[in-house]
Length: 484
Image (cartoon, rainbow, N blue to C red; front, side):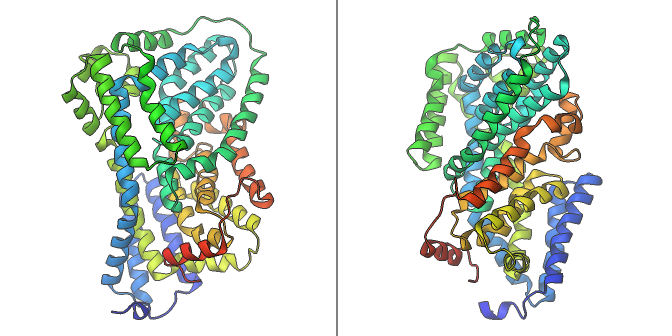
């Protein structure tokens, strides 16, 4: 069947809205309320979308082809995601990540608890690529310090969550960082460089506020046993050497020099394996085992049964297999997105909105609002990242904005805001792990409000907005298969 005969007619705006509401229903009700598996709910949405696509004239072969084409497009990022999983495990094997944790915990000063909490979680989340892991380990220890000092827990929890989301947003090893770049259609390091414009100013403003407020709590308090136990355990497992930083040097040098992502990561992995063998005395076989299935302390000859639980949470992670869940989520979500794009449902909704939006600032404002709304109704930040990128690529290109601006918007309105939604996966995790309700720490989580605000201001002023030529914009629109 020829391309022009695939769609017997264009979808109506009502049909397009119904398809979008189906996503909202299955994710917010099925996943959020009924606790069904997210991937299953996404496939249910895709099945419903198939029937809606057939209603306007598509046949199954068209839908199947649309899904296949979309999956092919995301495979380069999927390869990067699997590689990141292997990289994390390798850097734990080498001692690179543990060394950052070891020295990071030692910079905590009880009389500067708030700024230290923020900075420690920033460092840990950037080097480990997990905000949850940072908050669930160092964060819990920091809450213990706050209790001992009689410091209000809400601002301390906010510092922990803000630092955790800082790294979750900026780390090249974070799944949300990779997913935002994928959904917007931009390069990983282009995405990270773009995010610096909103994330760094928001972090600095937050740090000044936390420091100023935290200075009133100057009482000296001994470091909790949980922190000293983590430091002692790490010291017993690893040997420290400045050369352990080499993999990070390679990664950041590759980013600055704009080298291809995968070769740089594999070079860092190779160096990490060598460092683990030379400095830690681990076997190369165990290094490859960690790369494939994740690092386990028994690979270092340590009995997990008698090891600090916080250390196990921090170290026993990574590996190629660790990315299976997020990759499966991507495939399921893109089944829905591929069919929706082929049938024209998403384009119909956006075109109806774009007709009323004539400026660059208005486009950014609408995209930020979309990300925030999808974060709230989608429960999981993944849905917001995927759908905001899918929906707003054409409007951004129409305004001649590079797609790295869109990927930044996805995170400013998605990753940052998700931790302030009480019923979201992130909100529930942080509240449970830290023992502080979301609505208690949310007013202190300044980055969650500053990042979207800065994104909107930049949209209207043009500061921090990377522009492209009209010819390049039209070329990318055509490449993405959109109609002009």
